[in-house]
Length: 400
Image 1 (spheres, helix red, strand yellow):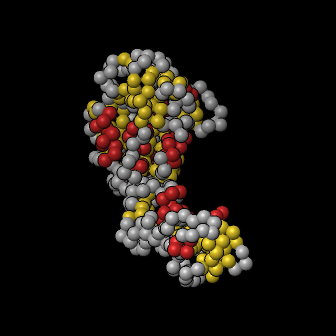
Image 2: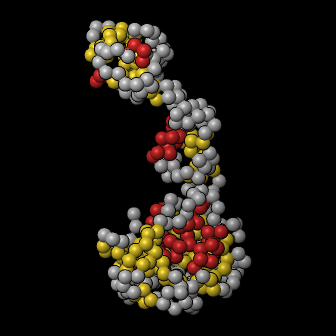
Image 3: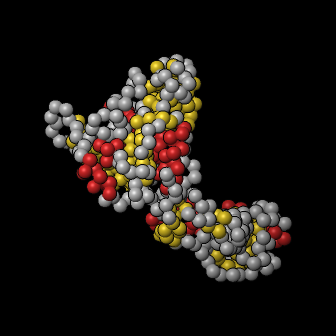
């Protein structure tokens, strides 16, 4: 355990360094939504697999429709999915539906709207140029093409591409199981009658929801009392991929997390030059499980998770881009900043032209009710002494 002071950037790098993509597992395509592909998916055949029609109409030879109207004998009826392989010879046509394979001999699809059907014949009134309305084999992908790359988040479009390859199973990184441990003798479960000095535990719910939003599987524990032996036993028995705690990391007399982890050589506690969220800890437990210990005030926990834990969870999922999107915004009013520390100010949008306003008069770490208004975090560099109305700031988008 070390005492140190870090910049926001340095601690973000240290927090992210604890994470690595989890091992790949075979997953049924039905269960792959939201997972991250672990290996490139390469096609071994052309996509589409054969020339097919892009319209309902008639497959014809262009040479037969150069003089219009043209009457052709219909030799086949080809719905989508048909395995028939008729031959279109001079003076003939095949009625064809969208998606059906184009018969040999045909080089043009005439839309049904440009024809008049007879008994066993069709009259072509208008004809497009040769090759029109044909989907050529291989125009989407050719053998050897990477159709879905490793690191792709499997959403609807990517899953459709996997299915188009005929793959019922994919190799993907599983979701990390993340233990959320909220500590403090003052905390009680929501709904419990409060005595003086007690407050409802909000952090375990906040962090569990944040883990879930980041794509992890939260395993929530809370509230946990300020008992070193109890906390040590809990941490030692966890079978999870990562742990995030809240509370007990400052310099007070009852900092249970620091006390419980004091003898762990691979866990360190530092001061980070940021407001809120100055007291932080991170490292690995003896079995190698990464742990991030966050301060207990709710806004501090929220901002610390965004800065230090969320990117790590995304990396564990196998994602390469682990950063929140940012926007440049103009402040509607000013606020003070802490000397020599970066500031993470919860803000909300108050105008159509990317105008933001702080959710409270300052970034107080205890203002959990005001936190519900936050749509972003304005990241103010340490060298900025004060934010004035009309200043441009960088905002992390944290609301859905």
